[in-house]
Image 1 (cartoon, rainbow, N blue to C red):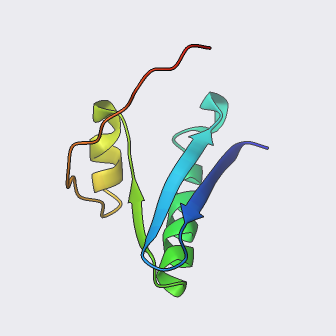
Image 2: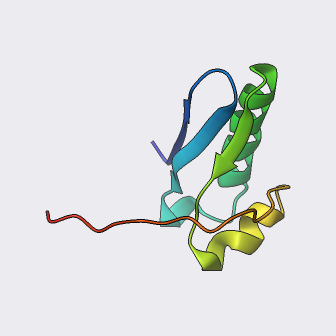
Length: 80
């Protein structure tokens, strides 16, 4: 396994893309883009809007795949 990603969806409106990652040794080889393109295609086939949250330094990466910044999210830390 060198990369993974998943979609959590209500099956009607939204598909949240999460858990996307590629092992550092395999990054910059197009694997992440291919995974995201397949995830996006799956969302489109099921007529749900693909959305995601990411850290600021990855915004330009996702913008290159057609995503647009649309709102400010919120998070809460938990005790582990």
